[in-house]
Every structure is written in structure tokens, then in C-alpha cells.
Image (cartoon, rainbow, N blue to C red; front, side, top):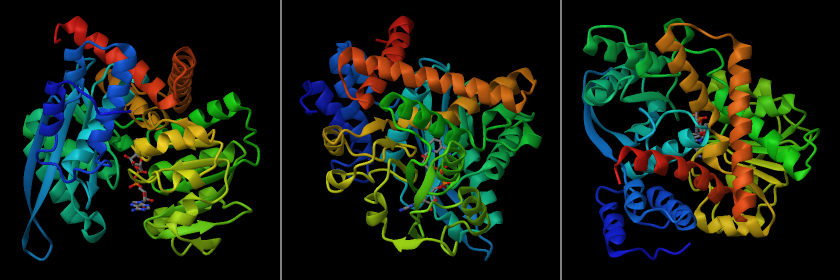
Length: 436
Ligand code: NAD
């Protein structure tokens, strides 16, 4: 894809670097813009709609003073980006990470917009982040940080405006604190301001494993499409948190063998396959795979390049690049993480015949069940687990086939096909609302 744009578009891209942490080609926000450009060209998108969709509608940058346990006050930086709400209220998770930047959050907010559109739920896209190292913070400090964030961004949140959710290093307890703080600000309970809440506070059954379940369902559909038998299929997973560990457990239930796993503490390989639920239990207790006591130690580079049928990056952005892509030969790359593949790596994967399940299709299960949670909160009527599972499966399978159909119609790679489906729907909403 080239970066030849109109002068106005180029100016917008220059503006995009204001407040950005990095100008490199791997800047995730630039990547989302380049991917949108490719789809806009194929769709012959109206230039004004193309420009509008290249840029977040709103962003908040906040400074958060937090009293630490030792009595000192530490200052944290946070963000909330509302990318586009033409199709409904914004929706997106909140990440706690030491390397968080405004560009990561912008990119993730854009991907949320495309993701909600792709699974055809009536929501727009947003994302939030706080620059912090939660591993070095106590529960009390995390609670005060979570509440401080809501006090700063709360005026922009709400069931009708923007609904938050858990993401990297955030969980249902953090969502409960955020909902509680928001409800105090409002003066009444508003459970629906966040999803991924504990069941006792209006959470949905089936939310915890929803993203991993969506990953496993799209892998199942992709395997059927390319004729890969899942019985004994070898899986390598980078990242063994919520998404990675549930993907592993559910794929093992489908017959796959989890041969490689890695996380912040290192990587392990076992050609006979790990016991995924046991490893998940170990990680719940210890936060990391280190100390599991099975498998051979590898570097992260070696893990990604290990022989496998299905490779699942489930950690952070930009893990598959022009450098390692030539050595990756899985039959299926299931992008459970957001933005794990750089645009320059895509043609290499295509040339090697790798079937890519693009991120905002592959990991859409989480936001889909979050949407079910919002529906249940709004009606104050709660579904059973089979209803959640069946409804999620319908959405994921429909989205997978919409992308596959588009890929065949336009003879394009699955990532571009996913953009074509998603961008077209958002563009239609923008046009019908008279925004451009
Ligand atoms: P998590 O915090 O539960 O787990 C993250 C995992 O990544 C951990 O195992 C951690 O050790 C590992 N990790 C972190 N930094 C790493 C590094 N530098 N090298 C190797 N491993 C590293 O997060 P999660 O919720 O499982 O999210 C994982 C990915 O999935 C993210 O890209 C997130 O945006 C995406 N995602 C999550 C959800 C969700 O519902 N949780 C939904 C959609 C997408």
C-alpha cells in the first residue's frame, strides 16, 4: 500500500503525529490509517468520509494524582479516545500498561470501530489506557488509580455515550471499582457504564472466556475453509493472559495440541502438548507461565518461529514483522491480539500461503458478549450460558463468512476484506446521518 494522499489527507496524517510517541512505520495509528486507505480505495469511498474515518472524533488526555501506600502521591497519565460513534455509543476496553501511548490507544479505538461494525452490533469504537506498571502496584493503589481515571473521564462515559471494558492488565474487579465510582458521580447505579463486570454486579455469564471462545470459533471456521483437521493440530500461543489461555483451553477441547506458549516471563515448548487448563490454573495463581515445570525454555523469537499449524499472537502489537514473517509457516495465523502484524509483513504471509484471521474479526468475541451484557443490563433480564454461547457463535460465524465472501468477491486478502465489510457499514451510517 502506498501513502499517496491528497494534500488535505497528508495534513491530517501530519497532525496525527502531535502528541504521538513514535513516528516510525510501526506506529500503530499510522498502520490503521494505511489499512483504511487500502479499503477506501477499493470501495471508492467519498473523500470526505475517508478523511472523517481516518481520525478520532474525540480524545481525552488526563493526569491522575494517586496516593500510594507509602503516603507519597504519584502522577499517572491516561487517555480515552472515542473514534467514531456513527453506528451507536462508543465501546472499548481500558489497558494498564507501562508502554501505553496515545497512538496505541487511537489505533485500538479505530480497530474497535471496525470490530463492532464487522460483527454487526450497534456500537461505535473507543479505547482507554493508563501508563502504569500494575505488577508493581498494590490492590489499594490500583483501586485509587481506577477511581481517579473515572473522576477525570467520567463526564464522557455512560450507557448512551461510551462504555468501557477490561483489556490488558485490567479485570472485572477494576471494572467494578470504575462502575462504583461512576455511579457515585451520577448519584444512582449505572451498571451499564462498563462491561466485563463481576456477575454479582450485572456482569454476563460467558464474558470471561468470550474473546478466547471467539478466537477458537474463527479458527474452527478457518480450518474448515482450508481443509485443516483440528484433531492434533499444533498450536503456538504468545501471551497467556485472558485471551491466550482461554483460546488454548477451548482449542484443546476441539482436539488441538498446545505445543508452544510464551508470555512476559519467557516461552516454553512441548512437542507432546501442554495441559492447557493446568497451565491456565498455574497462570491464575502466579500471573506468569514461569515455574510451570514442563516444556523446554525458548526465547520469544524462537517461540514465534516454532513449527506449528496455528499461530496465535495474544499479547501486544507489532510481533510479526518483515524480519520474522519469512520464517513463520503456520497454516493459520489467528490474530487474537490487536495489531500483532505490521503491514509490511502481510504480503510475506500471503506469499507463504498463511490464512490470516485478522485481529478485529478474530478477537471480536469479547466485545460481542460485552454488547450482550449491555442488552441484559438495559432490560435487567439475564441470559443463561447456552444462550450467550449460541448467540456468540452466530455472530462470529456470520462475521467470518462475511469476510470470506468479500475476500472472494474482490480477490483480496482477508484483512482487507474485513476492512471492506466494516468500513462500508460505518461509511453508510456516516452518510445517512449527513455527516459527510
Ligand atoms: P492479559 O493482560 O490478560 O494478558 C496479556 C498477556 O500478554 C500476558 O500473558 C502477558 O504476560 C503477555 N505479555 C505482555 N507483554 C508481553 C511481552 N512484551 N512479550 C510477551 N508477552 C507479553 O491481556 P488479554 O486481555 O489477554 O489481552 C491480550 C491481547 O488481546 C491484547 O492485544 C488485547 O488488546 C487483545 N484483546 C483482549 C480482549 C479481552 O477481552 N481481554 C478483547 C479483544 C482483544
